[in-house]
Length: 332
Ligand code: ADP
Ligand code: MG
Image 1 (spheres, rainbow, N blue to C red):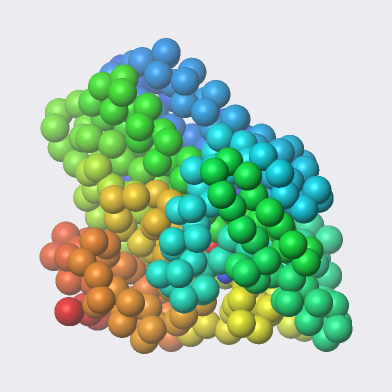
Image 2: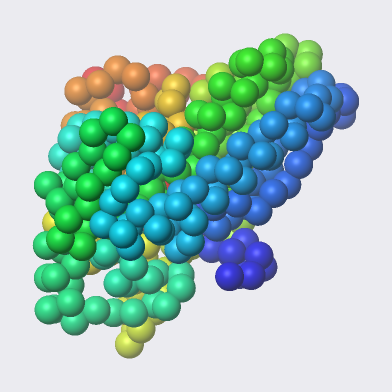
């Protein structure tokens, strides 16, 4: 796909309000079907090069349409690449935690729909076949090998970008970079602070607007801000809209009461898997999931234009009053 097409297909693009005039190293690279941009403060070309090559390496290995993962899926398993080997056990744990709402085993279903590529509405029989292959029990792994039975295909589309930001964080720590902002198709990681010691502000995009419209912003330091939404990667057929977040139980695009979920946490992979899973679950179940845990915060944007903000960020967010959203706090 062409870059220009992809730009309009990004998941919630988070606009970075921070503007910094200090010395920095900035890059924009096209990886994992999206635009990745990052800035390191102060200038550090060596670390920027290292991040660019890690992003390319991850993208090449985890791409579901070519590369090593594609080969593994076609061959029914085999020796996993370095990143698959790390990511599959993490994904399995998040699959269990979200009771399957996030699943790395949906490759056959995702490829059948081809949302954003072939844009196909499958018939009942094909859907049934894809659903029966897209099950955790068809995949097993020990050591560095994975065994894929009954047509199950791995797909890390809902977690790979978050995982990539975890890898970037490791590089920034190793290279002792004091401040950095990374945006991978709207998945943001903020490392440290601005050169003056102030936190970076991250703005959350308005799902109903274009990529420069934001509904709220909040100061972030040392955290991942990761979003999933239904309004950018979709197609329309016979008057019906089909978006790219699938409900593993039905095999269809999830019929959620939310348009976007934004997770603020200390892990990219976890935030990415959660944002997809909580979108599938819907507002009430997402809040129940949050109440059982103490390690992340949430922004839930509803179809009813109600924005639910969890208590840990309620005091610090700044709404964009022009947008007419209604805000409510969720407490434990
Ligand atoms: P984005 O990639 O746009 O940031 P997500 O992180 O929500 O958005 O990932 C959505 C992608 O993940 C889809 O395009 C599809 O490839 C895959 N996917 C869709 N539904 C699920 C699901 N329930 N669990 C895991 N992966 C999914
Ligand atoms: Mg995700």
